[in-house]
Image (cartoon, rainbow, N blue to C red; front, top):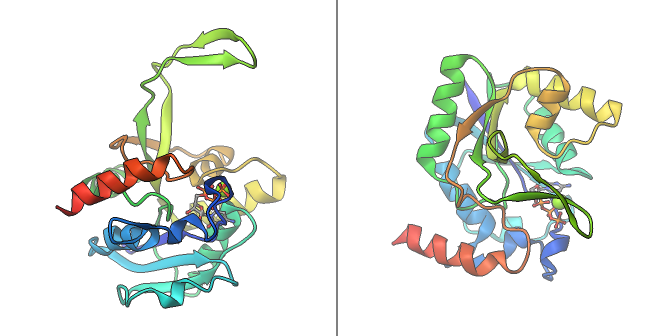
Length: 225
Ligand code: CTP
Ligand code: MG
């Protein structure tokens, strides 16, 4: 089964409030994007690694030489547009499956990715890494109105792993309908197709705000030693 990876890395990182996009922040010796790509490079089953970048990105070409499988595609306005552009980039020679992984999640565990791929291919269903919600969750605006039962609540992580055709059709349909699409799974759900939940490590955080940097730096440093 052929597999291509897609790494959406075309965001501006507005919530990070840093001068450059957050994927180019240096942590534990290299940029966040390099850490993420180094993780994916450990997966020999990937045929190609498509990185979706802003057309005005001046940083990527300055990075040290990366894996030969890495190719660059144009990002889009929203994350879903960046993923769809990357799928269309692959269209001339499409893989059977695609593994979509945020540039902003450099902490992902390789064994978790391998398990996601194995379980989905074995079940012949797409799926995502996710972790069970651990906190007590409240609904409300200024005051707590209700405590939400969390026994069936999961936090969606990446990678998200789907069949190429299924994901392309779902994203195109969901985007055209104006549905809110924050990850690949939400497009697949919109299309009424199954999304397998594969438990992954909860320290696979998406680096989003400045307070995420110390923790991510600490964990990356620990992973390298
Ligand atoms: N992304 C992308 N194309 C976009 C928007 C986001 O490829 N148009 C990527 C980001 O680069 C990131 C991933 O999608 O790797 C997850 O998005 P998020 O964490 O929201 O990153 P940003 O959109 O850059 O951050 P913010 O929302 O704070 O601006
Ligand atoms: Mg964003």
